[in-house]
Length: 219
Image (tube, rainbow, N blue to C red):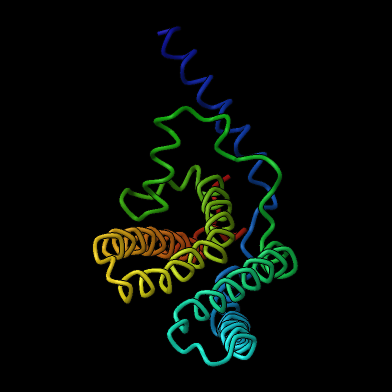
């Protein structure tokens, strides 16, 4: 029995360490911060810059309507750069303060199987473990914070390739246009998975909020 007792003691120590790291980690509005960015700042900034870049290139090289796809590509590039810089600034000013996520991964001290169980709970694929709920919630916050940052930047990449696909198609390079279009689709699918995981973590935090309240939390 001593071997089993030793293993249990080691597991308890790992979870105790994770619980200490989880203290103070909380989501204070990541979902609202990301929503505000995509309903207010991103559409206005990106499309204004695309229009400004396209119109500016057209005025700089008048009388060449056949080069409109190239001008549009320049406009998208300007919009991409502006949105990239704006996204980084917004992440630092609005997204980062919307969560207390700690400096160290709360799952760092856990074994791979324990980490897997925590992630399954966050994804809604496994039963919730009340004993270690504080650790699981902290892991969900850290996951959500990382996903929020990625969501500010990842959707930009399909947008920068769209005008290039159009340009290739108009030139008759259908093969390369199709290949690039497939690449855009793959990136867009990846962004969809980011959105899914972000929402799953948010639902987990909302679902367990009452259970994790001070009066209801296990000792």
